[in-house]
Length: 299
Image 1 (cartoon, rainbow, N blue to C red):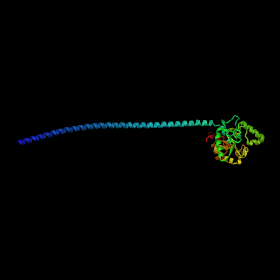
Image 2: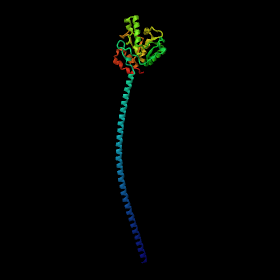
Image 3: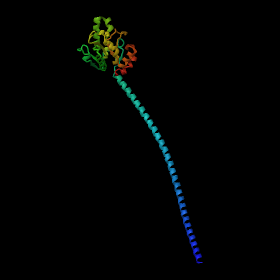
Image 4: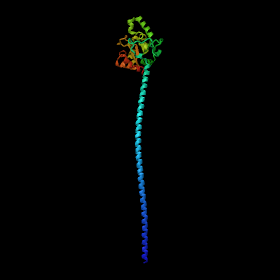
């Protein structure tokens, strides 16, 4: 009987313990369930907040991208405006520079004077410089030339001398008065009909421009009219245009007799074109000649 009671008590205690554990586990289960529910709610709230923030950031990014694109386009517009202004300034500056350049060059230097246009007695080149005795025949007589023409003439004479062609200047600038005296002397000596064939009246001579020279050699001296049959003349016909000089009165001209000694500076561009096209200075119209004025002293 006692054993039966002890066994019953043990069973009762075991069942009580199991019931207690069941209550405890249920409590833990409910706590975990509540925590899980809370976590889910917090996660949902966080997710919603993150999604909202992502959406906001996307909208901000789109706005920023649009503003950046607008700024870039605006910048390009400003750059185009600045570039256009730069080009306009350069164009204006270039035009002003061209006007200044043209203003500094005497239009007379490319005029067709010989029995065509009259150069009045008041015309004198802006600046004349003496030709060094090294390149002059009759060194005791000073010979003058337009200062910008001199550097081209010096190069031509120096290069010719380096090749064994001893060119010398026998005549250069002549004033209106000097040309008149010279023509009078020729008229007295040779008669007006003959003098008119080789000497210009005052006001019609290219020498008054200061850009024209009569050339000879040490051997010929004052017999420069015989220059045609020399190596010096051959060298000039083949090379003078490279220095901007042309033969004013070739055999085919209608103004004066053939003058192989008389060379006029007209600029490298015009001299080259005349040489290549086998044309003569006086064959061109004055309008054609004027287009070369701006580049007259270009190297």
